[in-house]
Image 1 (cartoon, one colour):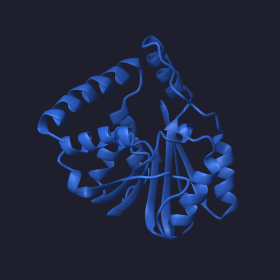
Image 2 (image 1 turned 90 degrees about the horizontal axis):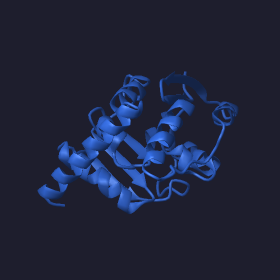
Image 3 (image 1 turned 180 degrees about the horizontal axis):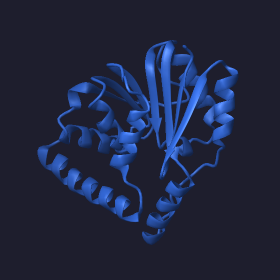
Image 4 (image 1 turned 30 degrees about the vertical axis):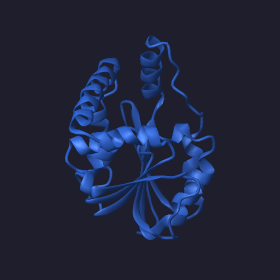
Length: 203
């Protein structure tokens, strides 16, 4: 990537962020809220769903070694550019991978986080199974996605552009019940357009 590509991408990203805010979704505020749900972020973490790197950039300012996976290499390219603009490229390892078949050994990560990606999975169960498998016994999982208000914001924005934001419907309570039945302690929180689930298996 060139410096020109990095700067051009940043201008587009900044304009898109402002447009989200205009329609009612402040991604910076949402990311700060998500990060606040886990006060002590470890040095090493796994980020599932790189996307354009909105949350990843915020996470990299708390964790110094993040592995970020996404099945879409082209989309992940925008995350690479956004991370490079912030001068944080040395802290992240990008990997193109299917999150329902992750290439990691059991109990690899102490923190696994996925933000605004769940609604893109046809079925959250294989994803959750992989998260549980690669999680250290004393690890923490942080899942976050748009709530109905957040999806309404996206629908309005995309509709004005003549587009449709793809979304798979799921029930948060089913995810909570599945984790709870496996001995996870779950805490839920919500702010404006976002819900956050934090889970752990240790006292």
